[in-house]
Length: 206
Length: 255
Image 1: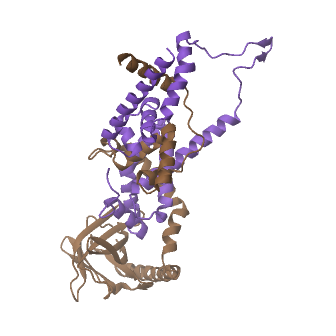
Image 2 (image 1 turned 135 degrees about the vertical axis):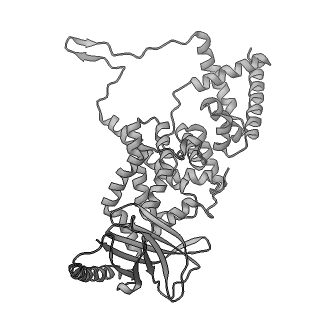
């Protein structure tokens, strides 16, 4: 992982110029051109439409340039930029949730009254699990979860990130701040321990 | 053991298919996630964040985004030599908002000494005076030769607006020779001049300038590029890889 080297960082030099009031516009434009793709692609990955992503990206840079005097050149600009983008993302998610809550809500379980009287509620198509699946879900899965809980913290977290969240080894390594080799070792150990627990459970309760 | 592996895979599949996995309602602030990735938290705080991440898709993805900001893949970088019209349009829009919006310039102004307002007033008065002088001079020149420029200039240094003699302009064959005189206490091994026309984003940067004793810093300006107008020159001193503001000048070039 790259360290937060601030020495001779051309980005920080651009910011220093803006903060000093020299070449403000030129340096601001350079920063915008360099980082706009990162911010735009951030919002695209979050599922925003191109148009919404464009607006949110503009909002990020507006906030960046308005607050650039508060940026202390002690760590990388990219971190600060990401923090602003993340705040705007959180705010947007919150705003949309509120809008959704304020809108008309209809319970899918409640019968709906119409002109002709009462009609059945619109249902969600369901597929009933097979008896075998029900057994797994009810008992084995509970035992499996319990076994997972007994794993050492870091091993358990690696398992959850890999098997529940579907992260790649490389991504788990970043999130957990460990090497890929350690991730692989944790997952290998976890599978061994969980398999042993399942085996023991089978023998106890065939 | 194969059965166990199959069981495990099935159970893990159920684990991931069991859902939806609702993220926690509360999330650490982005600054906290950033500090976590930079290993600036205590072991206890680190542990809390890691546990949260193991259960929160939103924060996990945000953290991976941060890593992507720090080490951007090629597709997140501007393409060299390719004109990005969308970015150009985005900048134009943002520029309009930034420079229309007073709040952007407030922090810059507040850093300057309080006497700046008075300097601005003095400068404005000086400009009015100079403007009147220009009009008189212009009237005196009944038939100026093509390409002949009259220059009026002022320098602003440490809260005082100083008159014309700090900037000199001579016409030399095909070019204009501009000499800038800096304050004596400002001393750098090399200088950079940035010349921009009023109301234009374009800046002409002239590097590698040296100060000649008793003379000043001389720049050759092409007549083709320096059309009549008002120009601002910022003189930057260069030392130890750092550029520092040394002086600034204002030019009015009249036809």
